[in-house]
Length: 106
Image (tube, rainbow, N blue to C red; front, side):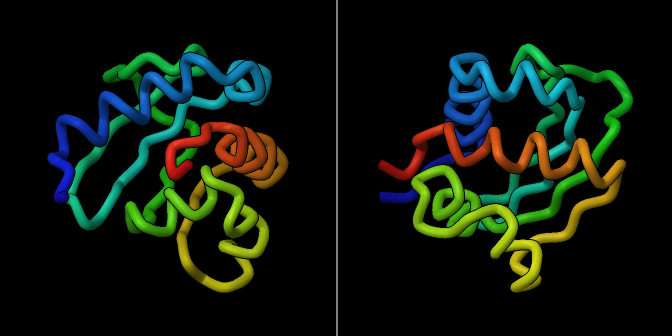
């Protein structure tokens, strides 16, 4: 069953709000998702925001689900060029590890 971009953003924001690791990473990240096309910027508390992001992550929804369900690690996705990200490197890996705790694809 296809998921709408509004459902995608809502599910993603709820998962970020429930993940302590997301708050610890402290990043404001703009997610540019494909299939379904959606874009959302999440602050360190997991809330959607219009604030300027510290990072921009471009990724397919299916690849994001693989990361959040622990079928593929964030590092493996980076090295396999499954995503692109711009921003401070150490913080990138901190929020990347947080993504692995979201549990969206389970």
